[in-house]
Amino acid sequence: MKQLFLSLIMGVSLVYGGGSIAFNDAPLATKRVAPSAGETILSFHDAIKDAKNSVVNISTTKTVQQNDQIQDMFNHPFFRDFFGPGFQMPQQERKASSLGSGVIVSNDGYIITNNHVVEGADEIVVSLIDNSKEFKAKIIGLDPKSDLAVIKIEADDLHAIKMGDSSALLEGDVVFAIGNPFGVGGTITQGIVSALNKSGIGLNRYEDFIQTDASINPGNSGGALVDSRGALVGINTAILSRSGGNNGIGFAIPSNMAKTIAKSLIETGKIERGYMGVSIGDLTSDLKEVYTHKEGALILGVEAGGPADEAKIKRLDLITKINNTLIKNANDLKNTVGALLPGEKARITLERDNKILTTTVTLGNIDAAEKGITGAQDSRIKGLSLGALDEESRYRYRIPQNVEGVLVLEVEKNSDAQKFGFRQGDVIVQVEQTAVANLEQFNNAIKQTKRDMIRVLVSRGGYISPILVR
Image (cartoon, rainbow, N blue to C red; front, side, top):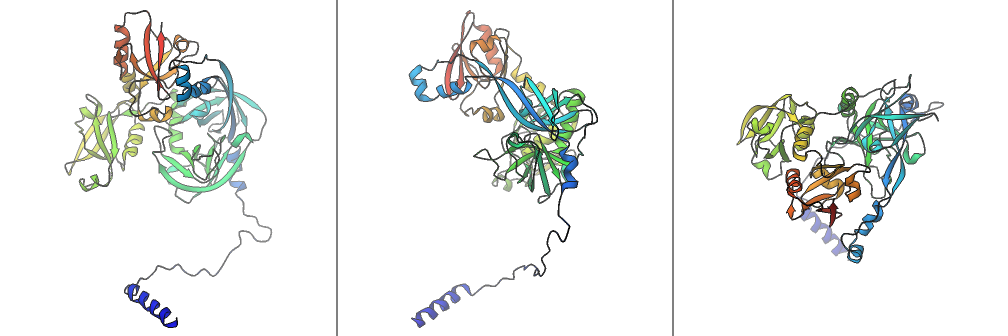
């Protein structure tokens, strides 16, 4: 037995003994220091107490259709087969309340929060985080594309938060989330910056998130993410969780983006973004072998007659720089162009056939461009706002990739469209015998139909439902 054991050891030595490595050993730690000694307590209280006074609780009330969830249940195949594909529950309205947070950014009552906290609210009530006094708030401006909003209360001598520079953040920086989780009132949680420049999460159209493990829970939305000095570095927005509770993966909108958008909303009531008229993607590992640059935004499509087309940009061009900003991926291009104003001239550096070229693009207006595609309401269906299908709307409304048509963006309350049975998130796929893939086709189909009653097919929850327009 002893001989066998020794031979096994020798065998292992023969197989693995041929190499060597010098590890990069850390210096030996010989001391341990207590975080406090005697009467000294380690605390961030003084650093963040002012920031806490700049965070508010937000309560909203909105009118919702009571049977929306019930109707979703009837979209299940069992009920669809039993009642028939055209079955619709009669709509009833009810009041729904929700809670969120916000950050005071001016002494006279301007507050930044998330768009999803206040969008569609009939009433917004704000209370200071350590004060029971309540204020009625009004919406100054909304930006659904970034999920930011500005509201205002009529008050003076409020404590505006100090604005930090989110571009100076580093992974590992200590941060604090301040808000109103689960409606329990002012709460502070601690963590670190887990990651920066996160995109592709599928929450907003423009994403450049700070990821943090500071506990963020329902009700924290719109609250402050501050550094260890108490300066605002982000607006808490969302968590990644299967249970709905905190799993240590939270996302905040950088303060620099929030500051820029809030300034525009306060001064003009809207956000205007530049537009190139391209579809874009990232370089795959295979494609990196073809290009000299290994980072950039790959042009996959160019809109005919659009700004990029006018600047002679072509498919398979790789954009590497806009003005003096390096472009590492498609999200960089989208955010950089979106931060520029319509009409602004942007100098584009690109790679084409391993050659570096430059061109100048006069940016269009993304909202005007989308309205050019989506158009306005049709006169025969009052109260119906329509738009084009894009990846954001497909994600938001869970619309399958094989469904093509015109998206119902909004249904005005008590309008003809609501009475006919249209719902936000519906996709109009056919008018009478004409399939429609865009608003122009929809408008033409409506105009060419001479009947007093028009049959419209919509895709809803993966099923086709008929709606009769009178």
